[in-house]
Amino acid sequence: MLDRQPVLEGELVRLRPLRAEDWDALFAVASDPLVWEQHPAHDRWQEPVFRAFFEDALANKGALIALDAASGAVIGSSRLQGLEEAGGGSVEIGWTFLARSHWGGRWNHEIKRLMLTHALASVAEVRFLVGETNTRSRRALENIGAQLTDRREDRVMADGAVIPHLTYVITRESFAKGPLAG
Image (cartoon, rainbow, N blue to C red):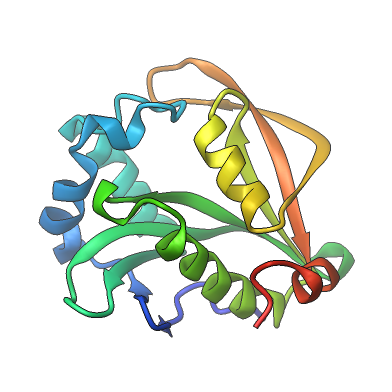
Protein backbone atom coordinates (compact mmCIF):
# COMPACT_ATOMS: atom_id res chain seq x y z
CA MET A 1 0.00 0.00 0.00
CA LEU A 2 1.30 3.43 -0.95
CA ASP A 3 2.30 5.71 1.94
CA ARG A 4 1.07 9.14 0.80
CA GLN A 5 2.80 10.93 3.70
CA PRO A 6 6.48 9.92 3.40
CA VAL A 7 9.62 11.84 4.24
CA LEU A 8 11.81 11.89 1.13
CA GLU A 9 15.30 13.35 0.96
CA GLY A 10 17.54 14.29 -1.93
CA GLU A 11 20.58 16.49 -2.47
CA LEU A 12 18.55 19.64 -3.13
CA VAL A 13 15.15 18.98 -1.55
CA ARG A 14 13.59 17.44 1.51
CA LEU A 15 9.89 16.51 1.33
CA ARG A 16 7.79 15.87 4.41
CA PRO A 17 4.06 15.80 5.21
CA LEU A 18 2.38 19.22 5.19
CA ARG A 19 1.32 20.46 8.64
CA ALA A 20 -1.07 23.24 9.71
CA GLU A 21 1.84 25.22 11.13
CA ASP A 22 3.36 25.44 7.62
CA TRP A 23 0.73 28.01 6.59
CA ASP A 24 2.80 31.21 6.95
CA ALA A 25 5.89 29.94 5.18
CA LEU A 26 3.99 28.24 2.36
CA PHE A 27 1.68 31.20 1.80
CA ALA A 28 4.77 33.44 1.58
CA VAL A 29 5.80 31.35 -1.46
CA ALA A 30 2.28 31.08 -2.88
CA SER A 31 1.49 34.80 -2.58
CA ASP A 32 3.63 35.58 -5.65
CA PRO A 33 1.16 36.09 -8.54
CA LEU A 34 3.77 35.00 -11.10
CA VAL A 35 3.85 31.50 -9.57
CA TRP A 36 0.23 31.07 -10.72
CA GLU A 37 0.38 33.07 -13.96
CA GLN A 38 -0.18 30.09 -16.31
CA HIS A 39 -2.04 27.91 -13.84
CA PRO A 40 -5.80 27.45 -14.31
CA ALA A 41 -6.26 28.75 -10.74
CA HIS A 42 -4.35 31.93 -11.58
CA ASP A 43 -5.83 33.69 -8.53
CA ARG A 44 -4.37 31.19 -6.05
CA TRP A 45 -1.88 33.83 -4.86
CA GLN A 46 -4.77 35.53 -3.02
CA GLU A 47 -5.09 34.56 0.65
CA PRO A 48 -8.70 33.25 0.65
CA VAL A 49 -8.12 31.18 -2.49
CA PHE A 50 -4.85 29.76 -1.21
CA ARG A 51 -6.43 29.11 2.20
CA ALA A 52 -8.98 26.79 0.53
CA PHE A 53 -6.16 25.05 -1.40
CA PHE A 54 -4.10 24.64 1.81
CA GLU A 55 -7.04 23.29 3.84
CA ASP A 56 -7.86 20.82 1.05
CA ALA A 57 -4.23 19.70 1.00
CA LEU A 58 -4.30 19.02 4.74
CA ALA A 59 -7.66 17.23 4.57
CA ASN A 60 -6.59 14.90 1.75
CA LYS A 61 -3.45 13.79 3.62
CA GLY A 62 -1.27 13.47 0.56
CA ALA A 63 0.41 16.88 0.54
CA LEU A 64 4.15 17.22 1.00
CA ILE A 65 5.97 20.44 1.75
CA ALA A 66 9.21 21.03 -0.14
CA LEU A 67 12.18 22.36 1.81
CA ASP A 68 15.49 23.54 0.37
CA ALA A 69 17.90 20.89 1.70
CA ALA A 70 20.71 23.42 2.19
CA SER A 71 18.81 26.17 4.01
CA GLY A 72 15.70 24.41 5.33
CA ALA A 73 13.54 27.15 3.77
CA VAL A 74 10.08 26.29 2.47
CA ILE A 75 10.19 26.41 -1.34
CA GLY A 76 6.82 24.91 -2.31
CA SER A 77 4.72 21.78 -2.16
CA SER A 78 3.37 18.81 -4.13
CA ARG A 79 0.81 16.05 -3.58
CA LEU A 80 0.20 12.34 -3.94
CA GLN A 81 -3.54 12.19 -4.56
CA GLY A 82 -6.29 10.12 -6.16
CA LEU A 83 -4.94 6.67 -5.34
CA GLU A 84 -6.57 3.98 -7.50
CA GLU A 85 -5.84 0.32 -6.84
CA ALA A 86 -7.15 -1.31 -10.04
CA GLY A 87 -4.73 -2.51 -12.72
CA GLY A 88 -1.62 -2.52 -10.54
CA GLY A 89 -2.41 0.84 -9.00
CA SER A 90 -2.18 4.45 -10.02
CA VAL A 91 -1.74 7.74 -8.18
CA GLU A 92 -1.69 11.36 -9.23
CA ILE A 93 1.37 13.46 -8.50
CA GLY A 94 0.62 17.09 -8.87
CA TRP A 95 -0.61 20.30 -7.43
CA THR A 96 3.09 21.20 -7.41
CA PHE A 97 4.31 24.76 -7.13
CA LEU A 98 7.71 26.23 -6.35
CA ALA A 99 9.08 29.61 -5.41
CA ARG A 100 10.45 31.43 -8.46
CA SER A 101 13.88 31.31 -6.81
CA HIS A 102 13.73 27.55 -7.38
CA TRP A 103 12.44 27.48 -10.95
CA GLY A 104 14.59 26.14 -13.73
CA GLY A 105 14.20 22.41 -13.43
CA ARG A 106 16.71 21.15 -10.88
CA TRP A 107 14.43 21.31 -7.84
CA ASN A 108 11.30 20.20 -9.71
CA HIS A 109 13.25 17.31 -11.26
CA GLU A 110 14.42 16.16 -7.85
CA ILE A 111 10.95 16.51 -6.29
CA LYS A 112 9.44 14.46 -9.09
CA ARG A 113 12.27 11.87 -9.02
CA LEU A 114 11.85 11.38 -5.26
CA MET A 115 8.05 11.16 -5.49
CA LEU A 116 8.10 8.88 -8.55
CA THR A 117 10.65 6.51 -7.01
CA HIS A 118 8.51 6.32 -3.88
CA ALA A 119 5.16 5.93 -5.69
CA LEU A 120 6.29 3.48 -8.35
CA ALA A 121 7.52 1.08 -5.67
CA SER A 122 3.81 0.59 -4.83
CA VAL A 123 1.82 1.45 -7.98
CA ALA A 124 2.27 0.69 -11.68
CA GLU A 125 1.53 4.17 -12.98
CA VAL A 126 1.70 7.81 -11.94
CA ARG A 127 -0.70 10.32 -13.49
CA PHE A 128 -0.19 14.05 -13.90
CA LEU A 129 -3.14 16.29 -14.74
CA VAL A 130 -2.31 19.71 -16.15
CA GLY A 131 -4.41 22.56 -17.48
CA GLU A 132 -4.49 22.41 -21.26
CA THR A 133 -3.08 25.94 -21.64
CA ASN A 134 -0.44 25.61 -18.89
CA THR A 135 2.53 25.38 -21.23
CA ARG A 136 5.10 25.83 -18.45
CA SER A 137 3.87 22.74 -16.57
CA ARG A 138 3.35 20.73 -19.75
CA ARG A 139 6.96 21.41 -20.80
CA ALA A 140 8.20 20.48 -17.30
CA LEU A 141 6.32 17.16 -17.49
CA GLU A 142 7.72 16.39 -20.92
CA ASN A 143 11.22 17.17 -19.61
CA ILE A 144 10.87 14.48 -16.93
CA GLY A 145 9.69 11.86 -19.41
CA ALA A 146 5.92 12.02 -18.89
CA GLN A 147 3.89 10.93 -21.92
CA LEU A 148 0.72 12.73 -23.02
CA THR A 149 -2.28 10.39 -23.18
CA ASP A 150 -5.63 10.80 -24.88
CA ARG A 151 -7.34 11.07 -21.47
CA ARG A 152 -8.89 14.45 -20.75
CA GLU A 153 -10.77 15.68 -17.72
CA ASP A 154 -12.65 18.85 -16.95
CA ARG A 155 -11.87 20.22 -13.51
CA VAL A 156 -13.95 22.80 -11.72
CA MET A 157 -11.82 25.58 -10.22
CA ALA A 158 -12.62 27.37 -6.95
CA ASP A 159 -14.24 30.22 -8.91
CA GLY A 160 -16.54 27.75 -10.69
CA ALA A 161 -14.71 27.88 -14.03
CA VAL A 162 -14.47 24.55 -15.83
CA ILE A 163 -10.93 24.03 -17.17
CA PRO A 164 -9.92 21.21 -19.53
CA HIS A 165 -7.00 19.18 -18.19
CA LEU A 166 -4.70 16.80 -20.03
CA THR A 167 -3.34 13.59 -18.53
CA TYR A 168 0.32 12.62 -18.72
CA VAL A 169 1.66 9.34 -17.33
CA ILE A 170 4.88 7.72 -16.24
CA THR A 171 4.87 3.96 -15.73
CA ARG A 172 7.41 1.85 -13.86
CA GLU A 173 8.86 0.80 -17.21
CA SER A 174 9.08 4.29 -18.71
CA PHE A 175 10.53 5.70 -15.47
CA ALA A 176 13.29 3.08 -15.47
CA LYS A 177 14.32 4.23 -18.96
CA GLY A 178 13.55 7.94 -18.60
CA PRO A 179 15.52 11.06 -17.74
CA LEU A 180 14.91 10.79 -13.97
CA ALA A 181 16.02 7.16 -13.60
CA GLY A 182 18.60 6.80 -10.86
